[in-house]
Length: 249
Length: 314
Image (cartoon, rainbow over all chains, first blue to last red; front, side, top):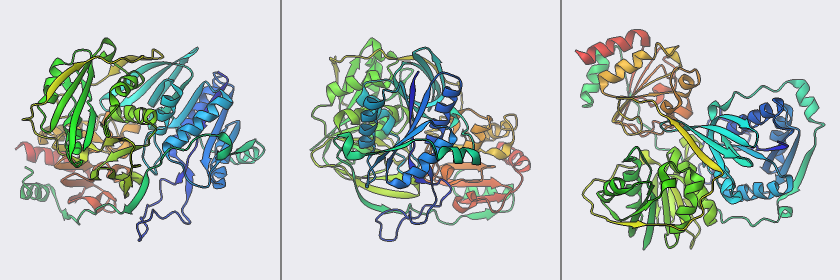
């Protein structure tokens, strides 16, 4: 295939302890480390491996958001992507609007494959890939843990609640990456230097000519209910007694 | 009045336990009339199972050859063919619902509300974000249909005792052939189902190998429990993916959860927050799992677990 499009979302790093702002207006993001959404990193790694196997010619990374997302795109370029596109938007976009952005980019770039992370670890929505496939009228291979190609047909192994499921899908298609699809590579310093010379195009959201979706309104954010402090027991006898106390044995 | 349509999940001639939980969620939408659609190749028995659930008014039975093993892109046009007139379309937050419902939402031109844990009003819902480290209340746009997945761990299944009418129908939909189901690889197990079990015993990286995980299976059998695992144990290949509990695996709410050799990463804890009692056994007294456990025991699992199993079996 000629092109693979990969989405990279800038999110709060997975190691950061999330705190809800005291006024309930959101979560604390000031001065917090930001990274590529881990599932998107897996998506990119898979695209790179497909290209390295000679099954694709070009990998394009895409992010939607503020200019700060250039950092994540540069990281994607350092990992090995050929070029990057930032769709600049002052406001964060909802999943359906993001899917419409990708749909518009598909018309410009004509990729045979779009790989996205199965979910972003901020909103945990798990919907953009499915929405894109639905708008595009093409197959969706979601929660993929293995991808193989046989000409214009991809065989996708998907992680489902009861085990694994295998689908055959015709390209072009959308695939969303699950955890065990691969282990993303580390970026080396020379790659970071090289990445600075790779093309990073910026497209204003307005120039794509899409209609934004009606977003959900965030009414309030709260910290989750805390569990009350438990007891420590010394040994198995103590554990059995405590379980009996609670009527669990 | 709210008109709710639930898309039922099923396999091997049985409706998935998530159906009764979706109904429970739908029943908390003010003034709701609840229909459940079942897409299968022969839905007679499945439709009867659903009709027995309390609070359901109609079961829509859509039988078709293609629905024997329909993939999402084949279900979407069928769902769209019956979606008209509904104010709410619900599916479960299982891999079935997560795959299907966003595709439906996109066709309807709305965003999906993922993982509803509480219905506040007809168009306001509470849902976890950031691996459950924040709870967000969202409002859907007025005058637009609500498409949502239901966080099944937040709901108790509705009881039987309903007597919904069953309507067989055919839908006029163009079914794409660009996506084809090939096979499902499901390991047979006599143990309780992880998603719905009252008791769950989970093992983590500290088990060290697939062979050692046998300790967890034996203990689970002594408890009469289902078996789960942390991501680390799944990634290390000790157990298959369907056993993963956490942000990206299964979110569960058993009465008893026993975490063995699991340090308690945030991503794991979000999967067990609704458990009744959490027991943690870990050799590291500083492990974060002890911050959420109700009963903690610091000790070597290779010594403690066989002892506990013996105590339970005696």
